[in-house]
Image (cartoon, rainbow, N blue to C red; front, side, top):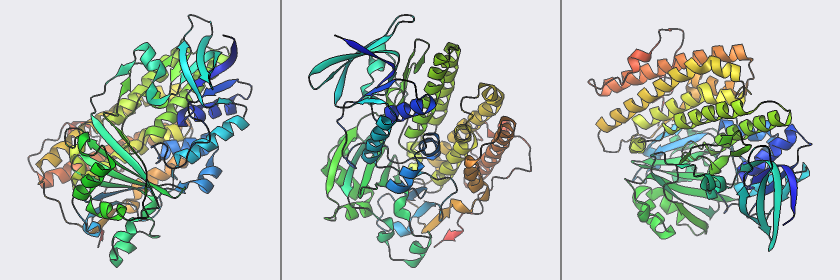
Length: 539
């Protein structure tokens, strides 16, 4: 078998693999990069892959790092934030508690039709000089010892081929070529399942009520552009619009509370919706919402023992780790891992030592993954609590926008010196988060199980500090300014934790503080009040 050579071979040409190829070529146009992709391009739009909703890190990566803003603005849908309805068993959605924003927050994100986007990425990669071999199957990866080249064996249209490469990056998704070969799979004790499908036509939540107070809560009335979450005990249901004119739908649930066997066909899923989200089911029963596809996945979340190696291989995207689709972190972790991989390959090509960086970047990447995992583990029972869950969402986004998101969006994610200086702040924020997650679980477990009436929008747009935190993601402060902001943000996390504890004790005076008090720092100049939005938009 004759072999040709590339500097980098990427196995898998989905979202992670194609964006990495583009990032590598933009950094070093002389680099020979080849992507091997199983699917034939162009792929089908809409009914293709999940992972359509982007949040701030992933959106920044696509728009600014890769320079794809024009495509996002013209060919995808600008997202109207995240939106939650506490509507289990309810038809009167306008009388349920709604959490979201009435106007766009400053930092943009998009709803992404994955088929359309990956077709565009494939064309863009080829235009940059990436060798994009689609319609092929990778048959094996022979990793080299020492300084020799790796060999990637593949087959295309019945013809065998091979590529020698200094670097191999596995972006094969759940196929996990290198993970299986090297025995790197790792359970993460987050047992959740998902089913999802696409239907023709857009689903507009505004049509669920003609009540003027419902229609006037959002200006303009663009609820349909949000990632809409219909929440109940142990589950959430997503509605995401796609620019090709379809709507993406999915049920994600704690496996212990909602067994997969109750929803693993379209008929079962619709029966489940009629019980838990009857308004959504009634809408989807309309003839214009013809089914396009249906898929399910058991125990979708997992970790990995290693993702970056001094032996010049790496894993990115779902070939490495996967958390949970709630809060849409998938493209965030693609952005972070791809950026670290680019740094490692760049150092190697410049003749610099990269092995210590591989170890350090992996430690950082796993710490980001483990800290984010705490937002989901054992938290699904809270999801139907209309009192506690809105507070959790605000806390979780405050945590995200305080440290990890600004670290990436400011361009400091690879700044080892700054990361070392930030370590005490990251550790304090981690400890605060662990304590608050425990408080929220305890609080919700004490609350009555009956659904709460509402008919109100808890409008995050009117929380000034929350809106400002989001807006700062567009800044590019120097290292010293970034450090000062991070320290201020962690103080605000403490102030918010204190407010949450106070609210919990108003409901349950004997509730434990779960270590929050010991973590607080006295700084009266930092406020994290939620009073501006709390019940201020009651219908």
